[in-house]
Length: 381
Image 1 (spheres, rainbow, N blue to C red):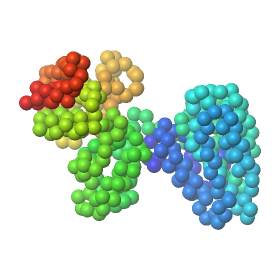
Image 2 (image 1 turned 45 degrees about the vertical axis):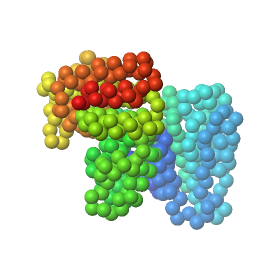
Image 3 (image 1 turned 90 degrees about the vertical axis):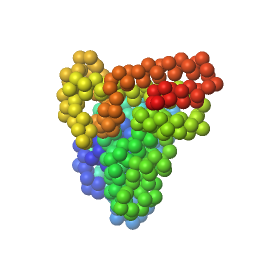
Image 4 (image 1 turned 90 degrees about the horizontal axis):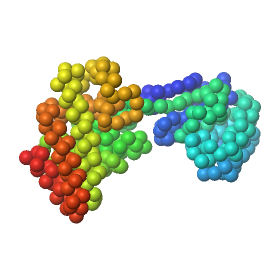
């Protein structure tokens, strides 16, 4: 799990006694934090015969009063010894009151966290092992900074490598199930679940069950047929069809889109977003700043180009379709085959056509599917 995201701070192997009084795990993805916590708890409780030696306390709270109740339960758990003299393991799970929220900012919560310090500092690692998992966390708070210095600390951060991390989760899940998966299928699966790691793993397990131990493994076609679209990825098939420049597939995808959706704006927005990236890639390609080989874009060339054009794009690391250099290398590599299909002028013409389609649905709000069909025919005929 940790191989797919940055890990900051002191760490320990599961099942080993820590020199620090407790372990703290946080991150920018609740599923990854929860799974890492579950692995720690499983390792620490292995071999414990008494169920009373293993205790999980729910750390979710919606107000200060609930924070107080959760911490009272936690304090009681760590101070109550096992009946049979075994080392006790306590997990304060899913803490959400360390976030930059109304509850997290409340003075009552801050006071309770200060009181919690004394409890954590007084723990005896030989008699009780303690884990706290938190998502999200406000890194500006004094309690967070204290935890970094005091605990066995892990921060799971995906950052710009979120897509690479997601791909790693897919390959790991398939490997555990003895199933192979193509690179194209991985990229499509990640796009369809719209970056949701929990859905990503569950859908991957579903696909593994479906294909069993077939020699061909999970194909791109299997992902297309078996995995539903989530969130903004609802527009993925129609956008993918359009940029394959296949008119028949695009018209079919538009029909499927409007079978369950009545609004064209999301679809048009998705087309515009991807086309912006294609325009930027085409310009870089024409300028000789990057090359497209048999395995897609060269990552090193893309990084060098990013440094060369940083003056024009700024240094904001936030992911944006207005800045091709904030996109994941794997995603851009998937678009590389598309961008070679047409010269720059055609991608610019597409962008103008999308804008005109937006104007058309304002004038003809009851004919949105027809507007999209006209757009596809105009661009792809």
